[in-house]
Image 1 (tube, rainbow, N blue to C red):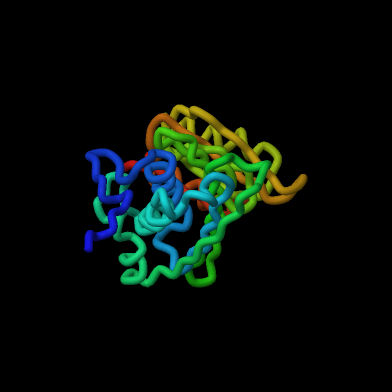
Image 2 (image 1 turned 135 degrees about the vertical axis):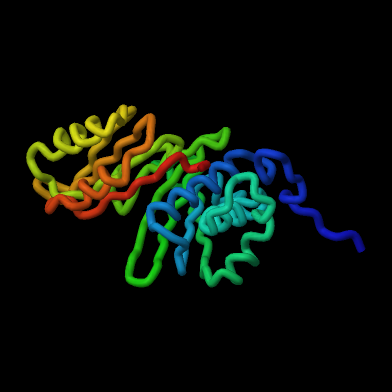
Amino acid sequence: MAEKSSVFDMIGPVMIGPSSSHTAGVVRIARTAYRLLGSRPEEAEITFYNSFARTYEGHGSDRAIIAGLLDFKTDDKRIKEALDLAKEAGLEYRFKSVGNASTLHPNTIKLVLRKGEETLEVVGESRGGGLINIAEVNGFKADFGANAHTVIITADDVKGSIAFIADVVAHDDCNIATMSVSRKGRNDVACLVIEMDSGIKPVTLAYLRSLSWVKQVIYIPDIDC
């Protein structure tokens, strides 16, 4: 009897699988979530929406998302074995699908990751050509592509805080490409996302983390590094 073939039997030099939306983009979404959490999760609940909900198994997006949570790059040959390797690594996962979410991008994935007492929720969109958009982080609007040096700062909504942080970053010779702010209410916690053309120094990150009104600072270099 002939052995059943898989979409992952076709291994190219850049990307594993049949589609950059269903593999490269999905891997990058998960690798970004990995970095937001700070390490490999112990549990992952993964929801595929719209077109992904109908095709994620046949096109290998299930393996791609788990591979990213194991921090595999988009050209890693182990992607096709990711589901088995996750079990060996102690990563528990479950998949859900929602086929009709009209307010979401056609290729949307929501990740709820847990490690110890920490929980992270990320909503990502695969835009094609391997490009992604991280739409939300823990309920805050984020909208960054993870292909630039990115700092995500969660802080109290203190008057003048955005200008202050921008000034600190500028003094580190970092050119700000984009900046966005989301908050859950006036004088509540806010989330600031800064994309930069170059990396930021560890001492600058340490200073930002030392500020009394800053709750968390996460730094993500280019996701493909």
